[in-house]
Image (cartoon, rainbow, N blue to C red):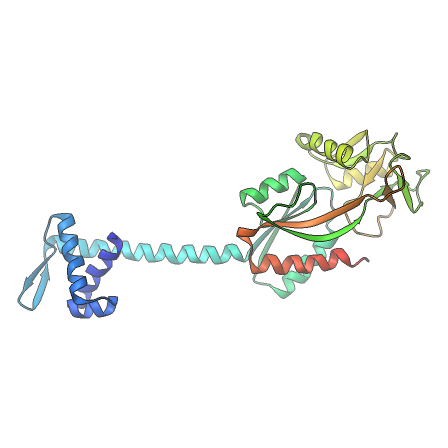
Length: 295
């Protein structure tokens, strides 16, 4: 309320007229007079002295006029900067993706998106499933790419990018290499190679070993390159998180359950509905195209 009265007071002083100030502020002359009187009542001092049809500012009124102009200018500057930052935030995409994902689809989507929307700023970072989820909740990520591990939530857009059979990469020297599919039973005695930081190893072990049932022994690598090198050395099998067809020099096979039934993986883009915007929706539309078109 004080800011509005300050605006009325400055308008009266600038126009040197209650009538013109009222027209400028789109209120009646009596209403603006009441607001100035309310200011004087609140402060307990006179701000304006009327002299017939004219008026002058008291010393207190002159001080309040100058300070009000400065404060209102700062408020307008803060408003403009806030709006600018809000617009910039909508034009900035921070995309999180799994540490075990080689980024082939994401790279293609980024190239196309940047060509179509050069004004948008895109940043990327990688992490475990839990790290991505926490970044999304905290607002550090605009959207994240990940496999589905939780039931879909109504708070999020759960944009399905692809559903495809699970796959593993094996060393070309592996006795099962080259087969169309291998089963979890056939790989039971071998380590499953996963990419995870130390503090995320147990969560990854629980999901892949318990929920998916793809291994009982695990080797953890700090990066995808390290995981691939481990698989090349014949120390285990690498669970695939990419749709890329050519994993050379590793050899890729579909991974099925012990009874031969498929293990289907669902990959999604997730973002909070309350933070949805045009660029997120356009980017995920482009991204899905690269997930579903196999090279």
